[in-house]
Length: 288
Ligand SMILES: Cc1ncc(COP(=O)(O)O)c(C=O)c1O
Image: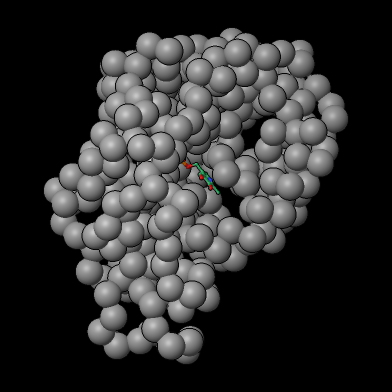
């Protein structure tokens, strides 16, 4: 079977999977999602993703998710049905399907959708050598960017603008502060070599790759500072990089058309890149 889906108890090809048009995920983006890397047939940072999903569900008062063990069993079955060794597991939970009304409906089951698609992580290795480009844009998102909701329209528009500018990512700027990318967390390396990234707050998603990378940096005795930084600081920084589940670490070598640092990946990002990929190998056995 190629890309596979699970929808409320049923497994099948993605092309045949469906939810009701009355689903509140469709009607209101009243839903959350997670994206987990499947590498060498194993899940990267599974427990952290589950933690974030449950945190988001609690924030939105969505109940009735299967147990952790049941979710893991569904996820494993999808991977084995797909036969992909490298892919992305997508989990979406909505409040459920009901007659349209903004307030919560009483006693409806949540909708649970999970899919596994193929994904090529290998493409990130040459990108780690060359770096990618980014543009900056005003942050037009809502005030709870720490919740991973499917209400992604500002991110969709920003990513499209980046694509039109031949850039890999759009970086969001709010009140002079550059917070994160449209689907990535952002870091600068300061002149003294510190790794600086926006602190956890309602302005950014608590990225799983961020959490893992900061842990690796600290274990390696590298200096990490979690504080807001301005777009001006970012422009002047010797190194910038981003992280996400689909791009464990990528250097940004161009911002708004100007070279970052020397216009090539710098030593701190390279060192972190080696640590990040070694951790992936340690957890999953992935070796390209
Ligand atoms: C806005 C935003 N920030 C950061 C991230 C990175 O999070 P993670 O490392 O959990 O993939 C994402 C991922 O989709 C995102 O959408």
